[in-house]
Length: 66
Image 1: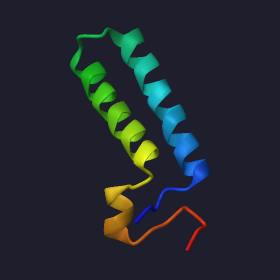
Image 2 (image 1 turned 90 degrees about the horizontal axis):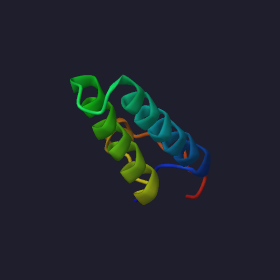
Image 3 (image 1 turned 180 degrees about the horizontal axis):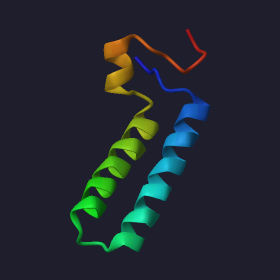
Image 4 (image 1 turned 135 degrees about the horizontal axis):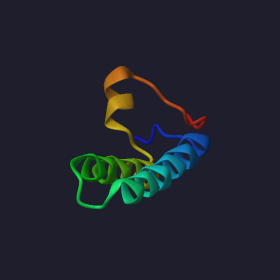
């Protein structure tokens, strides 16, 4: 049951790239960088599989297919 649309997916990929860049700027070994990397991985996975568990829990959908 996919609930992530095309635009939402592109935004998630963009946010993931931004998080990785900020993590590298802050220093790859710092705690905040590690948190940003984990969040970036979550964004990429949810964008790739087009399913967001938080959206499922809230009953939200950003895709237009029914």
